[in-house]
Image 1 (cartoon, one colour):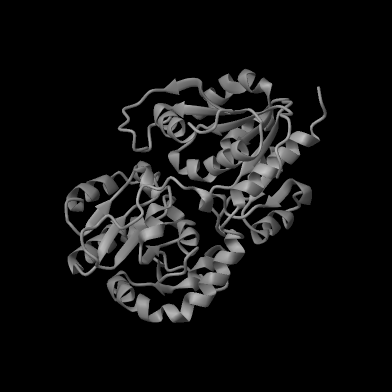
Image 2 (cartoon, rainbow, N blue to C red):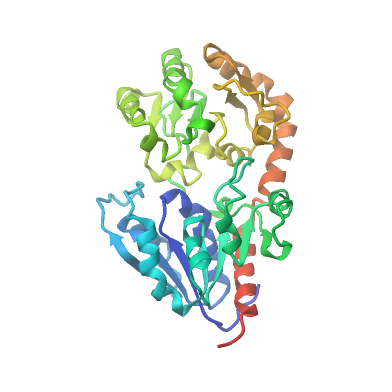
Length: 376
């Protein structure tokens, strides 16, 4: 993509949880590096502001702006997930400020209430945050986006099968793979024991936590042969506050690393450094499989999963139906990996698309949207 004269301002909405940042920010960097388009980053808290201010220093076209209702929170500069202001009131108050933008980019559906409910000149571009067979593709807000960026042709096809217009969905590759500001480049442990990442989902009907979670953690910890990263979805503690109690109980052990709100749990650090993935239906496993490694899946609800597309990821590793077998499955995982490696590679490729250059392609699509808007 070549630089072109600005055809209008692009606004990026950083209003939600920090988990959205690595899915959205690489597009900011790519757009700033390859065009002269002025860019506004609207932020909801001082945590977002601190991180983005640090990263955008080399990009003079980028301006960080506080959304109405901006919240200043206790912040040590590491990006811990903050308590957010109420998003709907913030969006309504932000509406007049977005009149100067020609394109608005977001990574979550809540922001799509604006083009769904209000007449707006700005075109909304929605980029994906995470992938997976259980994504809420039928949400009517999705139809309010002028363009939706998805990682792969497989993901794009799931929308076309639902009757969405083909020209409103583009496969870019996995944008988060281009995020370069990770917290950890190596496991956060003093020894070299194999590292298990346990990442249960936050929604009860999809999660192993409520039935098995605490016992799974305690069994691994008591076994002592693995380093455990216990890093569930950020929102799990909202639904299950006992998670924090368990973390306080075991967090001081040398072979345990707990994280419930740190930026490392959303920036790709843990999926990058773990040796074995242990989970249920979280899309984090697909990110983990960018580099195929052993996986173990927990069928705590004993669902009949084989042949169900909602559980397609479970073909990538052993599926455990008895909590007493979890440690044994971890022991077998490395030995069994040769049976799953090719399946994993194919599944990741189909789900994620390209794992390099996604942000640059996404930035190019945004410029195309700008160029297609008639001059006022």
